[in-house]
Image (cartoon, rainbow over all chains, first blue to last red; front, side):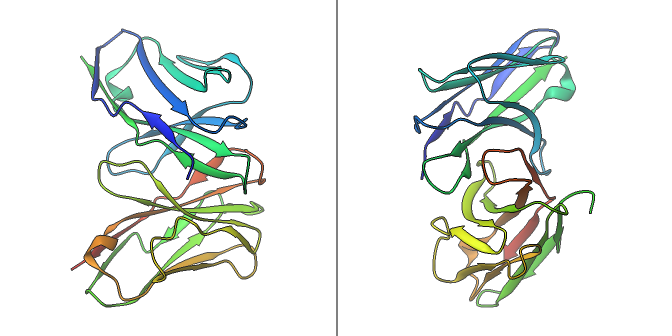
Length: 112
Length: 114
């Protein structure tokens, strides 16, 4: 299976700060990358997708992709307590059957 | 339907019992994924369908696990002779196309084997 690695955390940031979540992947030809948010006891919810090198912004969320370094990150600006969740990085394996592989997730806690 | 629907939401099985978990993907979605998620872990890939074709089943942990999607829509994950280590949340996701498009999850089935 392809490797997708994340720091499991927990990552704690104060309310209003920037939270930075990182992910590395092993498949050099991957072209599609996703960030999911998962609240405790709930299923993963798609929050960002990114396909090209550089930054993609959506509200308080910014995804950053560097294919040369095989690195994708998620920045959350003005963090809110409601952002407290586990964030999962997912990568499509495009050498084979286009499966979607996940990292183990980073647990984020935003402290009021 | 409006979203991915899974049933049952919860299942308690006695060790050795067979179980069947159902996934109804978003209408028109060609790709369907099954994942197993243990507590505190990320989703682990089990198997992948494109329409009715099972393109990858490399993640199925043993030959007790079997998945099908006979008409390219609803999928069933079957676990035979359940063991305690099978206890987990089983997640189903679907996406509109095979190549790297966004996948959406159902609410999952929490299986507890006692």
